[in-house]
Length: 383
Ligand SMILES: [Zn+2]
Image 1 (spheres, rainbow, N blue to C red):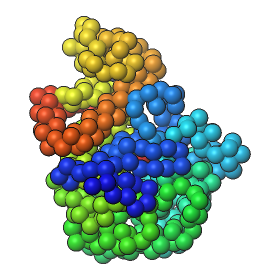
Image 2: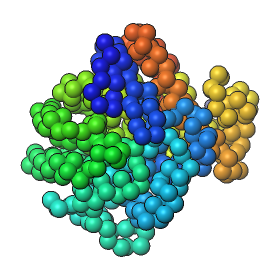
Image 3: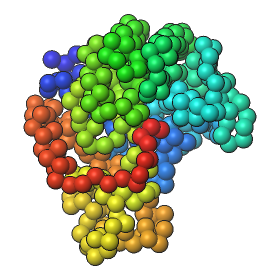
């Protein structure tokens, strides 16, 4: 049943879950896939070779933050973002639309584009949709994201329609600005928190010649069930030959729920951000290593995990590294958490290939239900 029309090849489906591959200028990636976030051009504290060894295939960086520091000219002079950051695999760059929301006290949005005030030095940066595409092309990104305008959760209907229509107009301008020989161009579906507007946005963008579509403006505080149903509403409208990327999601439970709804790509700051707070992913949920019970726990973090934290050290030692604030702890837990999510996606792909994804999903939920999920408080999920 293999289907291909563009860079994404759909190998097989199992229910709504999909197994496929996405071909980029820097390699072909099996999907579903989890991407590591390196906002400023680095997955914090980790060498590119170490990130690659976790099983993560794509790294994500941020257009707006890189434009502030070190600046696009600097990256161009270094031979592009791949050479600059020493990562030879695919790079996806987020456009900056989400930063307009997260840094809303520092930005102003009109139909022309977004004016950002740098949180670093107060300087102003104007980003039109064309500028966002151009910057990402100059970085040498493999996957270029359109500038979009997400609506805040809780916005009224007229605000949601305004942001959606602006996102659609910017999508057309982005396509016109995109050079065909550059990286893939992805549109971003908005449409707020109603099925009707979500599907209207998905249909409008699916009619444009994008290489893939992202689902933006979700995982921003809406209830879990609403997030799932709105995602399904979107994946029902997007053609099967179009790759689907859900922006900013990184817990086992949510990733599996959305793979089951036909999503192919994910990213999240949580695995590395939680790592810096001493929180580790396990098949039984996340655990906080600061807990006293781990002081004398000489077992590996997760039995059978191939990462350096688990193959070399005990829970007791990792807890000790946090207590003495050794940065090795951040690095080891980041590598472990990325390995955990990359392995989860690999196992999901195997289950879809063998047409037993529903059973695999149930097994993983049963394991999660046995444990407790601990976090370091509100750390957010978006890059
Ligand atoms: Zn591990």
